[in-house]
Image 1 (cartoon, rainbow, N blue to C red):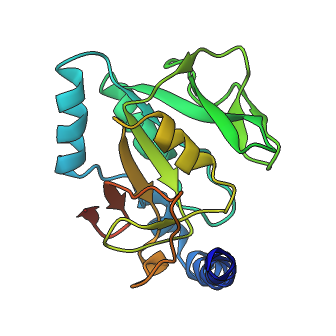
Image 2 (cartoon, rainbow, N blue to C red):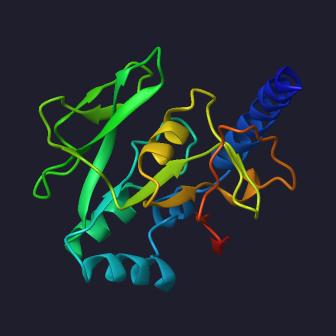
Length: 200
């Protein structure tokens, strides 16, 4: 049964990566430049609720290839006094990563390339526990199921931070009615696409 789920995920990843690549390559630059720049009111409310108690931390990711780019959103939230973090892989074999705070005056310029080719903070950047985690995805459904790259990095991070708000970011064409899941997969709380903000 578990092997069947692994194979189903593998096939679906291949299908959705190709679908995403074709979709993004066909988008005009004018659309790409404004995608994921409008901050939904419910998302601002989540950040405001966190700010009532402390200076909140929102973790983002450095996009690769045709992944949805959340960095303009990160810059906007940084201007609202939200601290911004990025993940850094510290144990590739075990699928483990930490989140490190970025300098608010120089968010994305002092990064290095990690083991999978994504930009990540230097190891001397402060480690933190985010209140909100924006996660990349390959597929999703409206029940909050997320199909990731398959390494389990984000599911382990979610398990270690059970109080964090989990928000998937992806293109609308990455939605599937059924996403194969196993006992280790942790559902999202919200999903943000270029078209809508989905509350689970």
